[in-house]
Length: 483
Image (cartoon, rainbow, N blue to C red):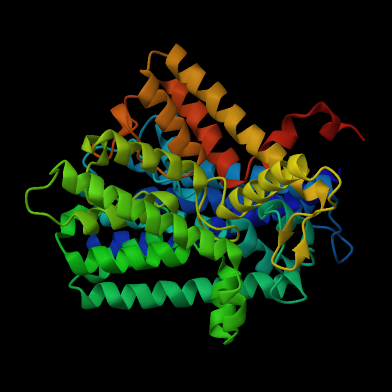
């Protein structure tokens, strides 16, 4: 691998990350709450180190060619560096002086997990609150995807990064050129974010809260500006708007592009979308009935609470309007399962993804069909396309790795003294990039009580889950480092 090219690209990424801190710095200066210095120091560090790597390792000859291995290494390392430099404002300001806590909060932001170690979030200065939301918005579409739109201008090809950043089972390239694809995705992402921002303003939110929650909704991130999350606004309208845009964010963004282009046939014929909406509808109906039967809320509103939490969990956003840890066992079990299901492939959501679930169900049915008809020649299809055995093997491998990581990480956390529900749900909530879980990490609590080693385990889960397992695990295989 060409180390100089890798360091040059990573340096460029760090430099641009430093530039993004100018927005929360401006917010800090406007409100004058004493956090501007933290951003000035953070920007200085990021720009200096980024510029140093850029000029030291800048290639002499034009375009850089990246190998498959280099693409994976750059993506995984790039996310780690984003979390590392993103932790500096928390440490410099003093809200999270310990590096483990600051890194946990930062990687939770960039991976759009939404798990927090900060109590009394409403007491934070506006600049820090905006930075938390901005990290999720950047991470939602992917810092690496943003880099794909920028790095070609510097002579860097992006296809290897795109493959590593979005290792979904079926690739959808909107435009022939990867840089154009990245720009198109960002344009769609920005347009939908602006629409939500306007609708939240219409509902009575102030500009700051509307901006922060637009950032974290479209990223399916879940960071809010108060401890009560969305419940702090006491508004059915705001609940409805955020529910709708969480639902939108959990859909493959190529379908949003198809909608903008007027290609309704692509939307109506998408089997993953039908499964995604079908799971949501079924879960909402069951939980609504379960909450009503148990008279959880005296004032009613069962459908409102059920629909919000179902969409929030399956899209792995993690916003809350109620402490679902107090819900009946059936409702909690459904939400726990939805943490694993996740949103659509090509969305900002985490989890296993509905597309993989759909193909696993199709493949399982095919195997049962073969038992009844041993001589039948069948194939797993997605729409009219045949899904080849190699793709199915990759999906099953991902599924096995996902479950194995969940079990191993849960065992480690129980060894650190956590009860089984807290350990398992915290791993499920972090590897699925959901945020809140059950037990000691329920929506009314934080992850601050997790032991230091446990926070690093969960940080690894967040990174692996955001990069869909393979991109991180492959770096641990000795063969990867052999020439």
